[in-house]
Length: 167
Length: 167
View (cartoon, rainbow over the protein chains, first blue to last red):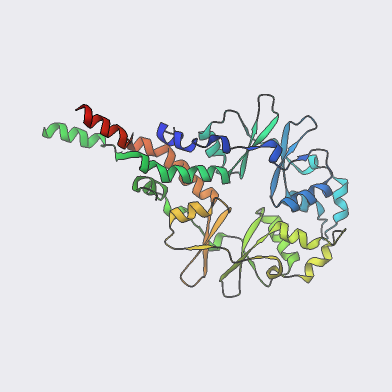
């Protein structure tokens, strides 16, 4: 469990923790892969969320999955890309978190992923929380903690017992 | 500045913080881009370090930079890749940290990059510290802090003055 002081500092700039959906590059599951290649190369992110036509979060697509779809056994054939859709090579729905976010869960998920998708109650895509935004909050927390709080080691149980005997 | 208690927890598993150079996928600056494409697609990382023939860290190469080199104005031409070397499209040497690492500097650099390169005294590539390893250390720290330490808010100066007046 994360204690109150740490949690308060981590969430002190909570409103800037999530990048709002309208500012996140996404693809539709029905987009052809040649379009996906252009988008992923231009934005410079290696993986982005995939939505369906209703705006629901359905998966993640990576640049390497699209490039792999170009490979034949021995050659690279860019023409193959138009034959596939995003839905054919995406990773299907991974974990998402709901608003208001549980910071403990987010910190855990970001050990393995570059970002966590945030959805609202109806699985509608709301935005993402990236490692970048969390690491900003972590920097703030580790710098401020011992400025604002006294942090003193708890006396181990064995020491308390000894002290009682002596007195 | 990061206080002592937080710093101690962040570095408690310091030996697992850096991934040793021999376990990190790298490319040579002289490798042709068709080889780079295969390596970057297979390992599933979007960016890896580039070394020279002496083992010195000279830059970073990304999958999107390699894919961009395939684009002609309107077409994708995989044949172009054999004409370029890694040195032609890599980002030249970015910041690296030296051993023993300064955790404050590492936490700052990881806000903007997925990993930080670690070099020894002669700029020889020693390994990388990734956001993944740092986020493991952060999870450990935020969970342990208030278990092992008493964390109490410092009395703001104004309150102390009021208290003195009353007494």
